[in-house]
Length: 338
Image (cartoon, one colour):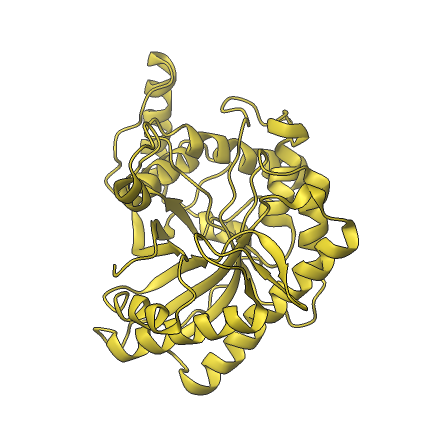
């Protein structure tokens, strides 16, 4: 699989639907409106083209990273390794690592390379390719100044660029590397998140980015720049998930009611109607794997299949936001032998 998708070029072309399909979706939407909001049925043509696993990284071991990569050789598509919240480790920017010591940029680069080596050694088909996001988040960033946030964003862009250049030299056609980001309204003020993204976007040669954002508190029934949590609104969720050129939206669709997909459909509708710049979703993220490992997650343990089905259904229930396919549904786990 060669990653040739340019979602910023002809973005609405990705949304074409046959007249028959569109008529069916309109009929379903009318019926749903008549009976009130409910969990939609799984449509016959829904579902992501690919399913992958993503991971919260908990180990600083390059051997463990290689083993993790090896265990992903049965899949192909977009996935993300989350290394934790932004921090500075020694003289380098880096991430906090989940349940481990902070890792700086050179250490994160080595972990990513080891993961790719493992994937390349163990992939089960010559056509399998990992489109690997290297992720951080907006957790804890409100205490940081603008300059620090922009510098960290640039450093993260450099990490993704360096690992991708290495992968293209040693594993062409097997791995492509991207940035990745989890920006959540409940975690930070919008100003801090925007400063970080400005840094990433402004780095020369920055890679595209898997954007696994949430839509905390955003409405499911309005598309007029309505408020979300913590001073955010639909405009800022749209802007930080799509408007910046690196952004490849793969939002969190965790709730088993489908409400998260409905929130994102309304954010997309806002972008289309108010900004003339509708979103193209490259995928969705579920967390059933992590929930199974750690417990909890009552009501927010969608499977990857359900997450993509919800997203596909709600996007196509409105002709303004229709999109034929969802490329990848990824289910996030805690790093382990899986």
